[in-house]
Amino acid sequence: MIRRLAFAAGRDFLPDMPDTQAAPVFHVAAVTKSYGPRRVLDDISFSVEAGERVALTGPSGSGKTTLLNCLGGVDRPDSGAITLHGQRIDLLSSDGLARLRRERVGTVFQFFHLLPTLTAEENIALPLQLVGVSPSEQRTRVHRFLDRVGLAHRAAALPAQLSGGEQQRIAIARALVHRPDLILADEPTGNLDSANGANILALLRELTDETRTALLLVTHSEEAAAICHRRIHLRDGRIVDRT
Image (cartoon, rainbow, N blue to C red; front, side, top):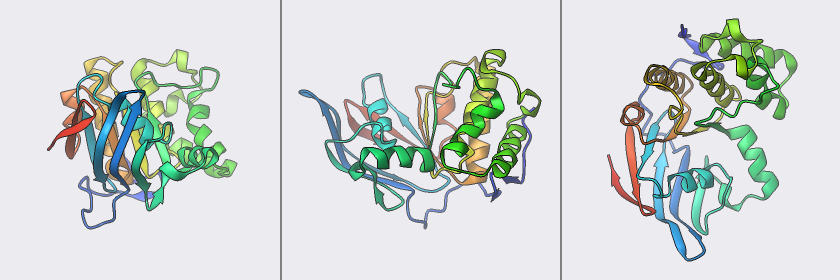
């Protein structure tokens, strides 16, 4: 059973609607990206506020994953600007991008990407180790998140000993434990059955409400898009609809 805490990740519980008066967590302005002669992203512009969940939808080949990679600093746009809390991430050096991914961005993948030789507890702690959090604070945060995702009793389990739904809950805890500004989720329920998928979506909704972390969710799932405050629909590398 997933437990609900009034105080998660060291931040007060907050309602699930973003503060539309606040400065955006990140802003994308006129971003383009091509691979050879093929333009994959064409004049993409939008912003996301703290605590806001945005679904990025569109058919295969529409540019969703490329955009996600540019936002996470894995790839660079050819032109335009991507700003995270006022910092131009598209202008950062390779070391700067690596630091940004460690400190300010969390990622949730379709296939979990847990390290197979680390326990659930150790997987969650890894981002904290990378940013130099003290061992005592690591233990506090990891245990809080294990409790929050309902897996305190599985702390010593290796990923192979966990179900798919359990692995994704650990992956979500790992993505949030270092208190990032932004979560990028790429089809987080795509490898789960409907019941586990619904549980993961509920957990993402509740945790982003509680921590006010912005979420950009790439999905083909109507159920996943439904937990978001709004949707951005891509086709052939362009935004064709915003709802």
